[in-house]
Image (cartoon, rainbow, N blue to C red; front, top):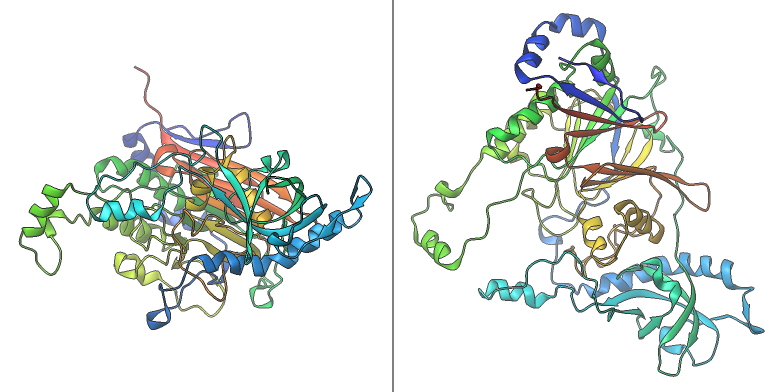
Length: 508
């Protein structure tokens, strides 16, 4: 078996010669030897419960979704106005000073002014509610689209508030604004009623809390150095034997059973694992009408058809978690394919899915630090880990926003959402969402130190800067089922490493 093979850049790859060799080598390392040489630091962890929904009778779905966009405008308008005032109070064009207009319908032709509103994109290829109705009535619905951008360039941008809508045009709009972002636009109204935009402003990053700012999250005096945070996503467990090898390698790496002492030392520095969505693979495909009627008429027991229910994927996930949890705490987010509610924010996976590992859920410890514990959380999710504010999603918000724009990378989309102070601007337009009325948790009130999105095609990272010195580490966490990659973040320095586990095929 080969050990760690350094690469030319900072990421490195953990390679196994073959499963048989790997297992034989692992058996030579006893538990007593590992316990005497390696130990983990406890994880300082404080979940913020930002995206938990009301329960029972307090949860209502009868509200109008349009109210969400007006709510965002009310909550972000002051911050956007301040940015626009700072930028345009002294701006003149042809000797005319720009003035602020309170409502979009108060704009007058030929006057240089600026106005704040919510962007709405009129796109012919966007899905609509009629598509969902057609599915319910067995009419063939349009296939899912990879992009909403019209190839003819006929898409239009609107700026709206409580008074109405104003069509906006201009080269400065090439910054890829999408439905739901709050924008200040400077320009003049044209003869055809459109608003020619010459400059734009948005809220930009909000205040960023200091590390360990929360008093009850302060570290113990005995702590010398924080450990590392491991992130994986897209386990895509199908329940078939094809999953076993990669999942076994993941467990053995995280528990320190893989390779030799140098790699075990590195693995022992990991203090928490985050699973960022899509732990289970796709659900069963939707049946056609004939098959559906045949199953519907079949005899059922206890409300479901046991012949069509396959518990193996959930059982394998539970088994995987139960093997890791005795030595490493886990935070697990639901994803698009997981058995959770579809609308954002997705609520935690139910404890009934984890009969083995739920014994580790919320362990009765006296402090905020723990060496074990299972925390099933929402998607999106926010918490303080080792004093750093962390915000993460399963990736649906990024995937949906990418359909509005062309030639934009996922990290660009993530940065745009932070600067707009809304982590799901396209919800509820094209992304299902709970109809918030009084407060929208999808609005960013404090700037995170780490912002990740799961289920990416490849690993990406970037550090972005804010106007007040904020620094945010953006992470695109790749699908583990296709890449075998684990992202590690040093919780002292925020340096990022990439570990890749796999099997080296012997030369023929």
